[in-house]
Image (cartoon, rainbow, N blue to C red; front, side):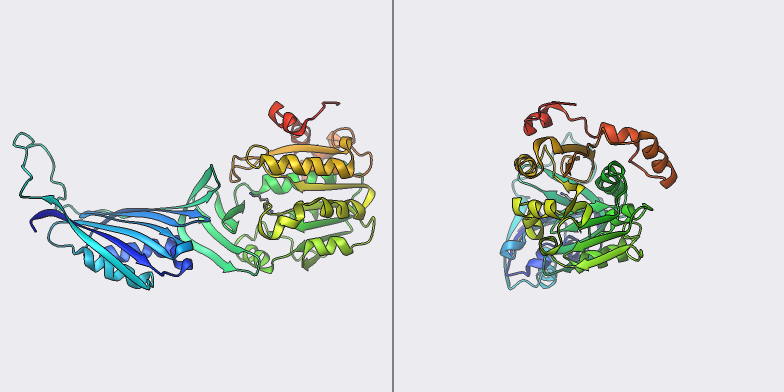
Length: 430
Ligand code: SPD
């Protein structure tokens, strides 16, 4: 066949799901396939669409290799297009079938650009050659993206392609990847939990707002928070007698100790009592009025954290709080998780009383929409804006060298835009 190029359209079936969702492995396999066929790689772009598959393209001097995977079906759709005499696309087919451990594969070949019917444009003399044989390629630019994908919105971060930690625990998939914009990042079941560069916003705000409002917190309980960021903030307080942390997943702790040591910085602190256990059970069995502050630093309400977003659980937390106790809950995004957001505030009010529940906002760029909320629920009459000493907060923030929390932020965080007030049906009474 006398054609400009050869295009093979390939199906790979029965591939292991772990391979079909491993963006680094797939990128490497595609690059190896290109090189096996003696193609010259120009660049590559790969995306991992967590929780689904991988898509990517390797641009070669002789055209391209492209892939889309469906891990849930063990399936990959691949196409390999090569121009010129030197590169045989079937070498790529063989190489990829092996790398993907495909049970079976099939392919059809099309000749592209039938020379018999193509006519060279006489007046197009300036056009550069499509694939100048001799031009050396200086470098191969990798472009690998991690994407947390929701139903209608996705957040992508470019990363190095090195997966620093990847384990399936009995509860979830735990990964640490190295992103260019936000440093090392912990993900659980494909959802971003924390990153080196913006973690301080969340961890300072989930802890200090309550710690500064309470007069002298001595006993603090953290449910979840396995990365250690909340503990690191709590142990800054001299009044603290003990902080109990109950994290269900040992692998989250291991991954963070190994790869995010500046977040997991206080696991050896003498005031920390660490339980690798189910937080729901721990709270159910804890004595009445045994904590000053309880912090629910959970994942989103899917998977192991689902039971933490229930009326029954919050009632138990209310029971174990001292009379002037405070519960802080990561309460999702009012913009993104609107339904859950409304439901849990309704629930908090039913348990703590309408005037005892206050929503405050933080800005976490690596969470969907960046617009995140925390709930301040007081068992007694403590109020996050009336019971604070701004000078004390100022000097604490300065002494500790905090990066986000200060006396102005404490107050400003409780200012809610109208759309959030409306979601909460908030009657403004300050
Ligand atoms: N969608 C992300 C919500 C994550 C909240 N918890 C993060 C844990 C950080 N310690």
